[in-house]
Image (cartoon, rainbow, N blue to C red; front, side):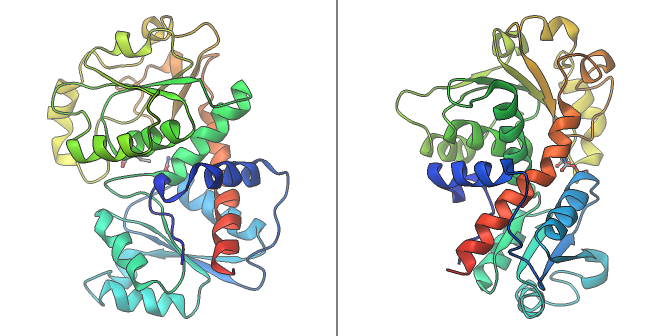
Length: 301
Ligand code: CP
Ligand code: NVA
């Protein structure tokens, strides 16, 4: 049974296959007369909508489940809920606070489990990010991406995805907000000997000549009590027009969204000519189609 909890659950050929399936104009109806459970412990605009529409595009029926109703690990054990869902659904997607929650679901090994964002990673987002970069530059290998800000779930999956795809990955974060040792070790695992992972504390150094400039919120869901502290700590890490002007000539700006205008990014960058954030959001659905076709085919082998 294959699951998709993080980008490195895929080999490089499998990643290529998923991106190829995501780029196809239409998809085989691998979910015909079947359903997929989409469980959310946190709010979502893009992930819920893109997943629901992808399931429909594959001929299936999505069922949105708010965790307040099912009470993962509270009303019932995670394993019991997973077994119950597996008796109705061909696959389970879950957006969770603790990554161990999706690991527990996958451990049941009843149906494929997809991570729809955890405190550790956001691999469905990273697939859409690669798709967007590939559409823009016609390739991934050799392109450079500079991530400015918190080394959070989005940054981790992006780092794995970019590295696996043969891209150059750079990150600039304030002291205390960079990748921890475990994250670095895991990124190093997918790195080729010739590839470098560059870590900076100065956004200008990271962005210099980059093809893609990427940022995300300074305060992720679940960290709301730290918001004021983080706003202080991330001073100087706003992606603004001046910083963008140091990127490569034809560079693009990406953000997983939701954006906090005036904090991690200024209006003129988010709404500017280099911004591809709406294409990127739309690509969430295509990335989901590609991943689900691949995953369901693997499950039916
Ligand atoms: N980018 C993203 O995952 O957005 P949502 O939180 O709205 O799903
Ligand atoms: N890092 C953000 C991403 C939201 C899509 C969060 O976890 O809240």
